[in-house]
Image (cartoon, rainbow, N blue to C red):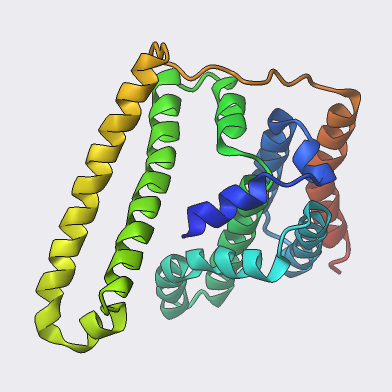
Length: 244
């Protein structure tokens, strides 16, 4: 599952992983704003920013091709609006929507693949976001792992009994069995979630997840924040000056 892969990537030990999540969040905002407001020289700016993001992925030591592929998930949604703009006689706007959405998705993936979710949510909390919503987001994210684990157990049990997903898809009458398996999956996940809740209460959970490690904003984080935030704007200015 995608969230499992991203969780594995975010636990890396590259220089990008070690930067403070607050600094990386500010850099992401700078990149998104520079991309969203770009107009003149967009092709040159998009190409330069794409290379910059690729460089960041290489320094982060995450699979570049796999990240690029996952960023393309946003394209089917953007294609609808791009097609409308194209049919309306504005191909430049269609190109702009496609490029900007892909670059934005790639920048977000770079942040997520180098920052564990708890650290990222704590960084977002500094901006004044409601703590309750952040706690709910973290619990929902962790619940995905519960469903994933239960699904793996059920898949192994079905394979041990000679069943396979291909057989369910190939034969229409087995869709009913697939629907029943899905219902069992959510029922087992719900029961597992209740067990997790009772275990947390037994360990003194009082409504908020404790901080296991307090991060300090270092000098290297400040330098990274300044340079990385100015980089997209510098590339954008250079692309605009290159135009006749």
